[in-house]
Length: 524
Image 1 (tube, one colour):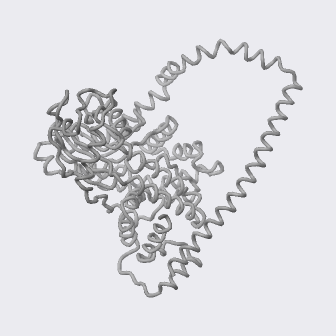
Image 2 (cartoon, one colour):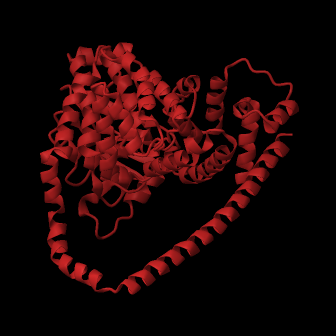
Image 3 (spheres, rainbow, N blue to C red):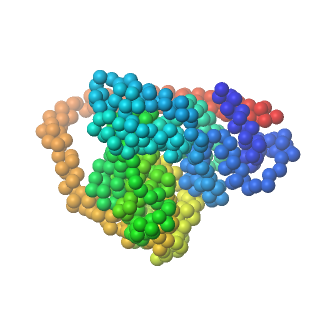
């Protein structure tokens, strides 16, 4: 089956002329010679979009990811890939019923009595026509039946029953393509395509587990418990399984329905500002953010409060990532480009031998022209493209853990531009950044860290005299023997690793050669 799928991909590549993306060389020349009669009226970007649509939903989702990666694809392609739509026909009603039966008809004795004996007992009514259908799941509206939730209106999300096998096959092929790209492309190592696929693999598998999504929603709801900036609908865990999730149905307006927002007298300027606050609060206060903030997932209540749905893709940031980002954002807002350059070098994102003054000048040339302009005159997509051009010159490695953050920032920009084009990010974001920096790096941060580590210190400090005595008690000869033994272990490990790496390189070269050969053979 994998070979058939590979043949299908090869045929799509040839049909849409995607060999244009291959480096100049024998493979590209051979394909052009074999299919010399082809001619194309549309641009390469349009042909790539159509090819991904022809390959199915998993490749569509991967194309959507690439549209947010200007470090990987040129501007014309990123813009076209952003048009990819993840709308697919809903699956059959019989499969909906089968999934509901599997989730609710057979209940264990440990589950609550009010869960109902069959799915028809659980739901007083269930709309079989979904309100939304995508490649991973679809959503139905329903009303709860028996139990403490009786009469509550809910949204029921169902995972597509056949999606696991499709994802397994297609993601495996994406890994093979990434391995080949890493060898063939000039920028292959720096762009780290296998890590990009790994990030995509993780995010799409996270979306398949609705218990995980329910936990994400619950965490975000707790983070914004006061509901002043963001309202997260309640998830009902007693009725949630890995394939079915039941949550509160919200009565709200889709964020891009500007006419309806105006009809309800909602202040668009405040709404745009609140969107920026929500983003920066999630990133820097919580290190946990909604990473799929396209208009279909964002709503506004009639009270003017944001509400979100679809929590399958969430981003997380470590303290180190947050510190790096905060330093960079703060330095950008202060136009302190030297601090930006130094932060990159200290984080190891550019080589240690990078000249800070040259890197600083390159960053200044990109960022200085955008300051003191309203949002409607600033295009962060273009700014990011220029920054990635700078990154290539200075051999900066792309950090996969920040891919979702970049994607979300662009989505927030798009929402803000649509709601209120005059929005200025700086005065909204700066107070949040300043507060976070004070809490992390200032005296408040020191007190917080002492409180956090105090329990550990209380158990470690009493052991210090004994540990010091044990260290001093060992004779120099014993310490020397210990060091020599450690060196021998390191040398043996290095020899074993070298042999393993050599074997893997040889195996990979053989697989890559066979892959190219099969591609040419099947295309002929």
